[in-house]
Amino acid sequence: MSEDRDFYKELIDNLYDGVYFVDRDRVITYWNKGAERITGYNAGHTIGHSCRENLLNHVTANGVQLCLTNCPLAACMEDGNVREAEVFLHHADGHRLPVVVRAAPLRDDHGEIIGAVETFSNNNNVITARRELREMRFKAFTDHLTNIPNRRYMEGRLRAAIAQYSGLTGGAGLLFIDVDHFKKLNDLHGHEVGDKVLRMVANSLMLNLRATDTVGRWGGEEFLVILHDVQTVEALEQIAAKLSTLVACSRLDLDDQSLCVTISVGATLLRPGDTPEIFVRRADQLMYQSKQAGRNRVTIG
Image (cartoon, rainbow, N blue to C red; front, side, top):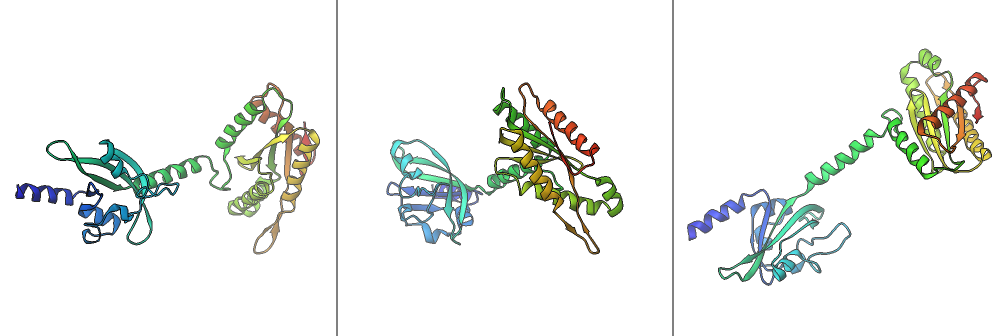
């Protein structure tokens, strides 16, 4: 029997996961090397101490202290059911560590519950995977040059805006914006300067919109602005004129000179029956009218 115990102890000690046993009073009777590695506490700090002492101080993301109130170990010894939870334990170095815990009852030869075992594993891989997924989603919808929403994101926002204001005249407005003489600027100063100009325009637009509105890069030197709760042509024109003026007042300082650019804008209100394609096409055509009329202006339609 002694050899069997030694075999199982060595087996559990070498598990990657943390494992510890408690008796009915929640006093820790066993603490494996995986638990030492994950928590920073060695067996000498834990064995003989009750988890009621809040040693690991398990908390939820909402700050609920499980060791004092909703302890999975106490619960599984009460009803015999296994418990699982994602919690944050207190590391010996003081920081919070995300772990997945699993608590199960321990029974004697007669089936009586005599304690419980908790296993836990470092949840950093899960947290990292979630963070990477969020970053991938962010990158998928963000223009890498200007760091504002890209065309794919704006297409989704267009569909949402049309669904929100369906059947109404007004409610949503659209600005189609093109940087004037951008090809000439690119040819004269180079693509690096051209990229800086696009970032300057993007920031001038983004930082001066209302919180409810969205700007994105539509492609090349084109930008799209979706406006919410715009009921009149006058309000639409006021917003478009403000953005046009602020872009024209922006300045890119280079080593030997300063660059200023202007934009041509087509502005329109949502109409009943508009699809995203029709809505954008109308604004695009109005923008070209601004170009043909001399650039640096807003055309409403």
